[in-house]
Length: 220
Image (cartoon, rainbow, N blue to C red; front, side, top):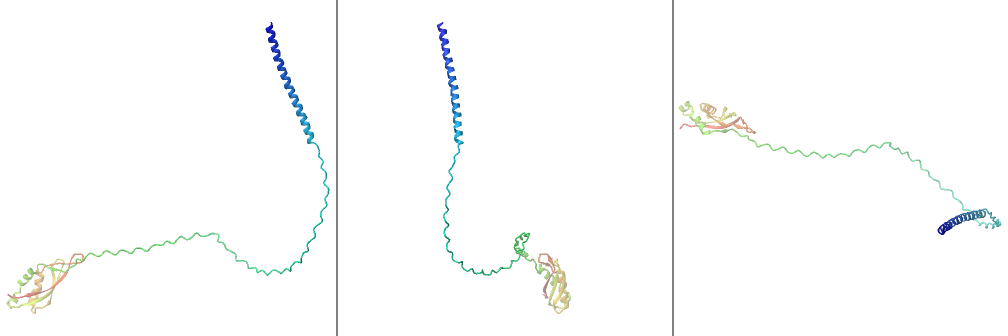
């Protein structure tokens, strides 16, 4: 029974403390709210007070300073005459500028032509007697029998034309022996027995040629 009474008295104490705290909070709230309302009303009164400023007293303006004595203005000379130049001629502007001319191309002169190659050496040569002693002997062996009988001797100069094959095609007496029998025998012998290496042109090809010689007729 005493234990129950102790529990009940402890609970009452806690309840009383709680109720007291509630009252303290409510009182604090009321006090702060009233204080805030009072401060607000005082501020409004202070801000709405009209302050009257005293009007300033009018001040007397000082007298104006005396005007300085001014000298008479100097005489003004008329301005010199101005020569107005005539208007410059109007400037004609070209609406479109032509493109610049292309730079001139300098073409070097052509190189001198190379000299032609020298011609090949010429192979030309005159007709040459082929085995002269042999055919000259045969001409002597064909000594005319009539001249032998008459014991005629002499020298006959002849000039002959030789074809490309080395044969005599024509003969003429250039120096007569004085006897027609010997002159005729000399040309006949040349056309029949004489042999030549034909003449050659510049390219080395066989061509016609000529020869001159003296045939000697002597009786042994």
